Image (cartoon, rainbow, N blue to C red; front, top):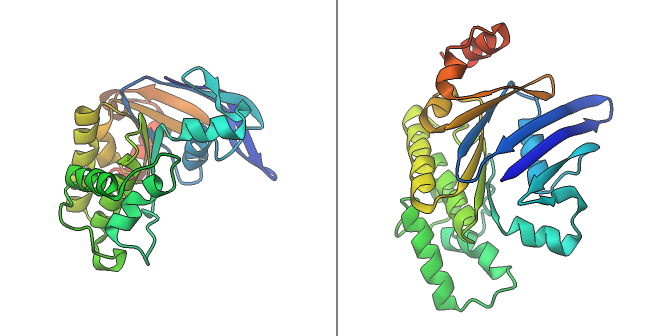
Length: 243
């Protein structure tokens, strides 16, 4: 379980998080929504300790993330896979080299055969069998996202954080990424946190939705409860994004 309690974060005079409280249950798919600049990405960076809060805490499996020594922090991060908004692939590396990077950099002594088998397994999981030797420049936007996801999966994480996974994709490719998120949730039983402004993704993947507004969690509930809400802030957000 991930527990976020009274989380505050300010950059200069800009208050981004102003008392965020949220529980993410083991095995669920939570989608975090909100307008651009509301702090969604800042929030998930706190979950993995890339940022430290000014006040409050994030607790993962009963460990307060911000209080962990460096060695323990790295140990905790191994439980997370992170799909970055732009996939964050290295252009000079092949698909196989990009996916295998966390294994190459890990403390474990994997043989070349073991790494190859793991990479092939993850590429098959994301529907990219046989794409090992391609470079990012040879891939579509959706394929790059899938490679990024394969890399996030290569260490068999307990949690996957998705930062705007469908941004920049056409509707068909966005649907395929949503389908993949659902399939991974079912197949490998990970806890998924999806940051998005895409209301179609909310309908497609969310078991629970958390909406951020004014630096706080303004709403939590099911997608149906969100879409049927009479709250004017929620209605305004949906009208701007779900057309």
